[in-house]
Structure formats: C-alpha cells, structure tokens
Length: 279
Length: 286
Image 1 (tube, rainbow over the protein chains, first blue to last red):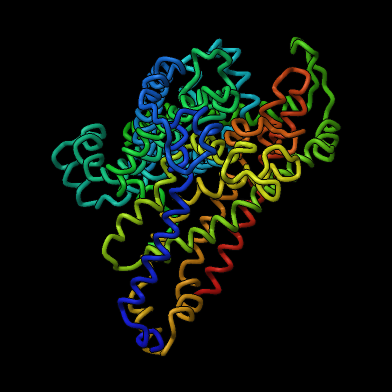
Image 2: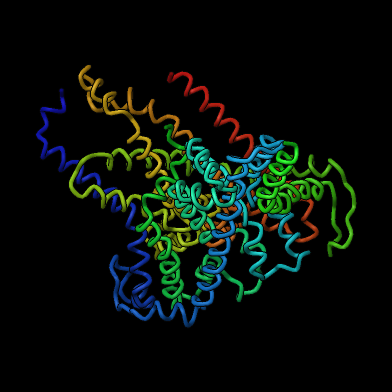
C-alpha cells in the first residue's frame, strides 16, 4: 500500500533514471571503442587529451582494416568455418536426436548417457591431446582441423530430441499409415514441426562457432590461417598509430553477431533459456 | 519380426554413427589420451616417452604451478560470478516492467552477448590501456601491476556476461506467476518484501543455473587473458587453461596433461556441487 502514496509519474521517472544509468554502464565500453576506432589515434591520445568523443575522424579506418589487417581473408575463413560447423552440427544432431526419439535399438539409454557425457569434456580439457591428434593427421593450419572436432555436439542432440519428443504419437501413427518411412517422416513432419527448437539451436551453434578462440589459437600457427577472433590478438601488440585499425576490426567482428542478435532475438532467448527456467 | 528389430537397430546406430564418430575421436579418445600422457614423460623432441606413473599426478597436482593456476582461476571465478549474478538481477528487475520504450532498454542490456571474448578484450584494451585508458588507474584496474591485473581481466568477464545473465534472469522473472505477486500485494507486502519473500525464492533455480554456467565460463577463461596480458605481468594472470595451453611442447606435455585432468576434475566437482545445492534449494522451496 505504501507504493500507492508515490504518484505514478514519479515512480516511472525513477525507473527511467535507473534504466538510463544502467544502459550507460552497459554501452560506455562500446561507445569508447567506437571513439577509438574513428579517431586519429595520435590526435586522440596525445594532442587532444583523450576526450570521450571522436576527434579528427577517419572513416576509412574500416576499409583499412580490410587492406592492412587482412580482415577480408579472416572474414572468409571465419565464415567458411562457421557455416561448416553449424551445418555439420545440425545434420549430426537431427539424425542422432531422431534415433533417440523415434527408433528402438539396443542400449539406447546407455548410448544417450554416453552422448551427454561429452558435455563434461569441453575443448579446454581435451586440448592437449586433440591438438596432437590434429598434428598427426596433418591438419594444422587447415579447414579440417578447425571444423571436424566440432561437427557434433551433445547440446544439439539434447535440444532437438526434446523438440522431437513433443511430437504427438497420433501424428506418427498417421504418417505410418500413409506409408512414411523414417526419412520421409523426419523430413516432412519431424523437422518442420520442431523448427523453433532447431532455429534456437542454430543460433547458439553459430555464436559458439563464430566466437571460438582457444581451439583455432592452438592448432594454427600461420597468420594466413587466423580466424577473425585470432586476428584481434594483434591489437595488443599494435603500435599507437595503428591501434585504430585493430579496434575497427573488433567492431566489424561483432557486426554479424549483432545482426543475428537483432533478427533472431526470439530464438536466442529461447535457446539460452532452455533448461534455465522451469516450465 | 526379428528382421524388423534388426533393421531398427541398424537404423538407430546408422543415425547415431556420425555423432558417435566425432565424440569418440575428439572427446573420449583424448580424455583417455591426456590421462595416458599424464603417466609419461616426453623427451625434448617428443619422439620418445618414458613411463613415470602416478608420481607425475601427485607431483603436479600438489605442485606450485597447478596451485597458482587454480588460485588465479578461482579469483577470476569469485570476481565474475557473484557480481555477474547481482548485475543480472539488477538489470532484469529494472527492465521487467511495462514502460514506454522498455524494449529498447532490453535490447541494450542484451547487447553484450554480441561481443565475443576476443572482441570484449579489445573493447577493454581501449579502456584499460596503461596511462591513457579511462578505467586504468593505480588503485584497482592496472594491467601492469601483478597484484591487480586480475581485476582488470575479471572486469571484461563481468561486462561480457551481462547480456547472458540479463536474458536468463529476465526470463526467470517473467515466469513468476502474476497471481502470486498479486496475492503478496493483497497481503500488504511492499515491493521490497515481495521481491525478497516471493520473487527471489521463485527464481532461485534460475540463479543457480546461471551461477553454474558463469562458473564454468570462469574456469575456462582464456581469450581475454591471451589478448590483454598474455598471462602476465610475471605470470599473474595465468589461469589453469592458460597454463594448459602453454604446456604443449613435448617437455611439458606430461605436466599439461595432468593439469587437463585436474581441470576436468575441478569442473566436474563444481558442477556436481552446484547441482546438489540446486536440488536442495528446490526441495526447500516446495
């Protein structure tokens, strides 16, 4: 009842003040990154005393990232690697999830437990051994090395299986009566019906593949095989007058993810909250 | 009948095969392999190995290197997780209401999810640059001071996780039934008491899930350290994963493998502990 004594407009103003304050905290680092990318680095840091707004703006910094920091090649590599991983994970996850949801075979529960156990084995734990395997296969500095270990993931199998399990048995029976075999049922019924789950998983898979760092860092040692994320490492060693180019590359690296976030926001939320919230 | 069962089995394993091949080659075999490598010592070129047995495990796991890595990792976790969860609650509570333009704030609060760890490291490199970065100062955030560099590195983790913690906590808040909040209001609960007595217990499972996820991220911290400090100054930010990454030369391979097994055990223990806590809390809530 105490709350009713505060007029509505005052309460709303209070919330807006708090929200704006929080938004400033969240956005300030991004704003300063934009400032550093656009400003001439020497003018900004030495002549003008590091102001919180861009000075002596150089718009060509983004094209220079392509010309001088080989951003274009890194973009192509990251793009190819990401597409291969996402498509691979979709295929392996859908097939395995289908087996777990609709096919009866011996040791099914054990096989499911084994698949889920890989969640306990992140690349950080297996790094030392896996990078040796990659070297033995001759896959250092190669697309195979960057992608093959990630072509299957327990998370995808789990999420898609959850989706498949939501399919009503009547639908399966009807499809069986129509003479649908496994593949036709998968393609015509199961996948279309579970599209939201699959979309959510696709977005998560994209984020993980595009952002991955430790693995490409461990199994490439040639700058020609730098993904975008690894290329950003150069920023730490760049000279003061070159810093803006690397910072601009970081902004460009975040752009595809930002677009995905904006266009597929619903899917991201669904994917991230799967399992986090009951019901 | 029998042939149909055999066909089902064939179909089942046929569908599983691609995933199983990847899991076997790149998850289970390497686990066995790090355990095995941990029992051996390599010569300088890695052409020969010598059995040293469990001694290497006891030596490394009780040694200074592993303890340091674990302690630095623990600092990173302790600095990022509680603050991360608290910030998530603050952002989500602020944005969980009907106001004009609230969608824009929600998008802003989620936005850090677009920033990979490497991008985040660059963003904070700009802010933490010694002597000219806005946040660089001799009291808290100083990349050049061995005692304080970890704060600077942890700061990047807190910021990067904001989007994720916000999204998950907001979803948790929105799942709290309205009639429960209405009942609390009718009972004369003020907003603070409603939050502490009704909302918070309801979102406890969400918050625990979140803290498990953030802890696991923290245990795996690498990219921000590689970009910002390279493990320095003077090894002050060498987390466990950073040490594992830097011990791939044949001579250190045994040690790196033992530390990998150590990381596996620590991660498993943390996850088990937190899920056990979760179980208990949920039972109390019921």
